Structures are given as structure tokens and as C-alpha cells.
Image 1 (cartoon, rainbow, N blue to C red):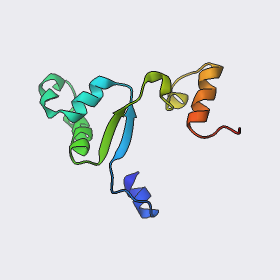
Image 2: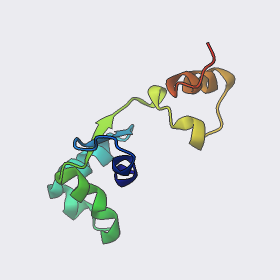
Image 3: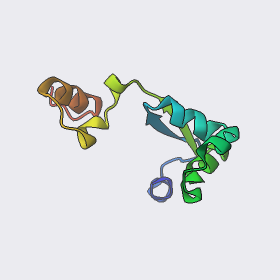
Length: 93
């Protein structure tokens, strides 16, 4: 995505924000010392930790109630659906 945005003329010099509601995943991505506890994960999945260390991705915590991506991954009640639509800037207000 960064390469595509760069080709379209957008500035991609800073890190891309990766909004997550999993604090354990954020801790593992930022601290390479957790590697011993994560031996069950495939080594090919460690690209995220490398991208964080290289400054390409910056994982940030977002509470579960404010996770806009839920609209794409879960079945939601009407109120949560409307909230996600507003968070994505798709509301016709």
C-alpha cells in the first residue's frame, strides 16, 4: 500500500499507522525480546516486527469500541454499524 500511495504522489516518508486493539500483539511487535515466547509462530510472520523496527509501521492502540474495521469483520447491531460508518467518513449527514 505504501508503494502504491508513493506512486500516486502521496508522501510516505513517515510510518504507516496500524491501529490495533490487541495490546499483546503491539508489545511483541515493538520488543524483539518476546521472540522466545513466540516460538510457535512461523518465522514468515515476523515481517511485521521488522517493519516496526525499520520505522515503516507504527502500531497504535485503539479500544475495541472504536475499531472502525469491525464493519468489515463482524456482524454488528444497527448502532455499532452506524458508528463505524461515521468513523469511516461514509455517513451522509
